[in-house]
Image 1 (tube, one colour):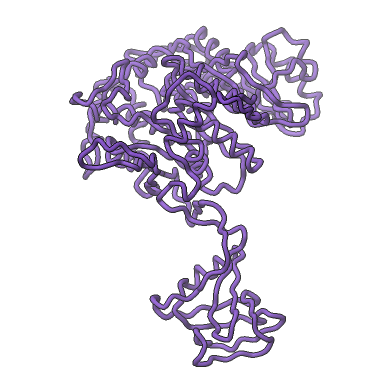
Image 2 (image 1 turned 135 degrees about the vertical axis):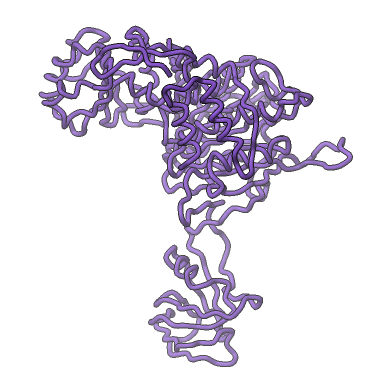
Length: 596
């Protein structure tokens, strides 16, 4: 059984106290052959969720909308709040849908870079590493749930926690899903104060959510000319060259093996119009085996024989990709920390980020898994100065992609409002550098700003209605649907605020029903409408039944979901249990107490 599935089952067990559950989880962590053992240190933000549930509220005056009647641009999101609270919300909003996560967490250097329960963790704290592991494990476990099946996570780190992080990620994502450790050239001018080492590099750990056979990671397209297929250091091998896969700079005709050839022809070669008419076999000190040759041919690679030496060379297709090196530096057009500081200073923001990452690094990482489509979703829940969104929008501008990005950061010292948001607002709208140079905006983007908020956790009908009301902004993110319209058939004749209608402008619609008494009238409206595709309907229900029977006459036109049950189900996977008891609403709409 997967360890984290077992952990979730223990958390849900009835009849056990919190202390008993903690003891079981502790035994599960300590009884292992190798790996990490740490003391779980509770966080104030985690304890807060024992009595309150996090939600998101949009700050509408900060929205930047550039959509037109004919063009609909990517909707990017900035969330202001603690990242654990935001991740819990995203577990409902974006579970199994994020394709790339990039995070640059606190490195835990002991120099006031890591805050735990409102206090800096210094280098003398005997629980320094335990606190960091406890902090990171909660967030990474949710991060894994957010990743799509093809999803990849990149984590920047330095020597202080690199070894611990590697073991932690092996547990959470699985050793088999470890892609590799990349070495980013952080600086060209490291400080010379140390007597032992001048550090130029930092680590970027990479894991995939699931192992995908023959998955390609790419640094870009292959450039340059042809290359030799022979290498005298390799053992002799036999290759079969498919028909018309080899181009000859030799006269048409039949060729048989000669002592002057670089290869031994096992079968004759018939050249017609400059290519081999039939397949042929040859023996030589080849770089490739047959499987690799067949794969290359399927990807467009062809072969050249330019002279009577009969030495085969290969020419990659223009669409062939290069597997990336584990070194990330100027050779792949990735900048340093100094470049990142220049980028920030160009925005004219009154802030100093000593350890910011350049957009070129994030762009390189987000492009590396070689997505065949440009519509991926990217998440950064340690957003800081907002580099990841900046990089995402620049990638879209470069290749016409439709990537979406979600940033999460707190607002300590006004960072979210005055730096993360303000930087990306200027990227979209355009700005003037301190030197007076105008930078045109990347107008093909929308940006929306949210704050974390809370509703009561006890499952009273009052709290449940409050959760559904608050969930509206969350559902807009979940469905990527923000435009509210007053009309839906004769929807405008229904009581105001009983139903809200959202659309994305491309034939996709969503209804949110707050007052279930309007369902019969709404069903009559839908019955008379032509629906090219089922409409998503979220309906308040005191139980798990989204009034399926009432929608029976239009069941082919609707896709129903009961709220807030769907939200409770998602949250229960990732939040701590209530200390005593919480109210549970049963399927017969009665409210009863349910001990955790």
